[in-house]
Length: 448
Image (tube, rainbow, N blue to C red; front, side, top):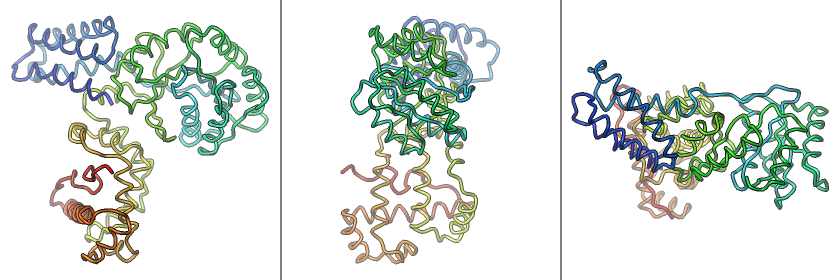
């Protein structure tokens, strides 16, 4: 996410390397490179120009005041503050007023509205302790209602749909009534995707909004469409006056233009960001955390929050005791690995750790690597999982056959496991950290 923009911004800051202080000349050179980076990320030139003008003014205003700070570090801080301001300053929550609260989902075809609706239902159920209802109001797309029904079953919430009724306004009204009768306190209205130029469809969603008076109207946009997404958001906002934006597909090859420009253009906050198809990959949008990611600083706060959601204090104490005695085994490793998987996409998680994004940029770090490790461990006997020392050459050959891997991969995994176990033991007794990137499954397996 934002790798290209991050690299170009780092290049802009490098123009200040070796400089003893900020001057009008080196500020101008750095700002020019920052503007180029933003335009390359599909940020509108006018926005990029206004942004860099602010950066330049701030840098000129501080160049003679903060002489103790290195020029590059000072410029990063200035850009960081301006990025936060450009993306909205502070996080804005979702309004859940009303009995029930009604959330209207709008957006273009293919933007990921239905998947987001499922993710939002899970978020409201687990994080906000609400009782959501999903309402299927897309009467045009084949299998749209079936898709929403499948998502509803996966997240464990009810779904309201009317197979024969082709009037989405009536369906939305009936869904709100059904929610009241069945004690659901939030209704998520999934509407049909529409084109901004499709007047009939735009009038239809205006009619839905007028009929149900939602407490929140969200515009879902594919972040990979860049500046086009921003232009479309403006068109929708002129008609719907929505309350907030949802950026989907942030795990794709996104240049960042939508995230950086949309608040400036439509004056409405980004409320959620979504990555991947997994239903638990929905995050509240925090401008400061996103700015840190863009600048390669990681996002340790979000990382800790995700870890705490999976944290089991008793299990942690048990594992700690085993590590201290150097008795950490394959069962323990499998348990810890599954907890990490529950936190989300592993590469995104690692990139939240400051300084790790560059180290992992070209590594194959994903759930497939975890699956390979899991297949190796599951090919062991229960006794072998609990006693790694038992793995002699004949046992390794049997394991290789069981999981369909080459014996060299088995040997590599066991070697890495031994190194990791020793590293954790050393840490527990205060002997230092060792090499984290040698952990089993962290990019050392070839793609099949």
